[in-house]
Image 1 (cartoon, rainbow, N blue to C red):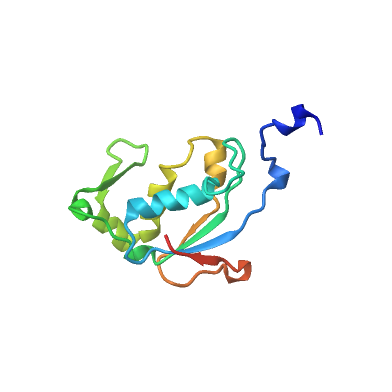
Image 2 (cartoon, helix red, strand yellow):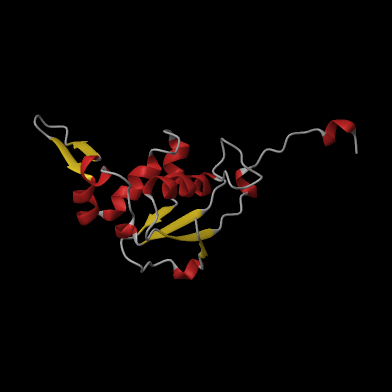
Length: 148
């Protein structure tokens, strides 16, 4: 082997990606700390073969999203905003309202903010599956349960 071949930097190709499925239980977890760990797994930063421009991450299934916790006064002070595009279509809801009606959106919103804002980030976000309760339809993929 030549000296030139030894010093080459490894670059992951999309054909070399081996994707696994992980199961995360959000019960009693802190929202921000959970979201950072999930974002790292989705992006592939927990692997030695991480390449920034390749989707080399794994699938993540999050269960018990309704039981995620926040610290301090975030339950009343943290707000989620949206706009319909029409005049007067601005809506603001606090964390307690969103977690009671659509608990999946809280984790989805937190993880989405930690991913790249481009085509790669949107394809990575599609590998995140969030469910409010303990049941999920991905048992056929045999997800490995991990604790964060």
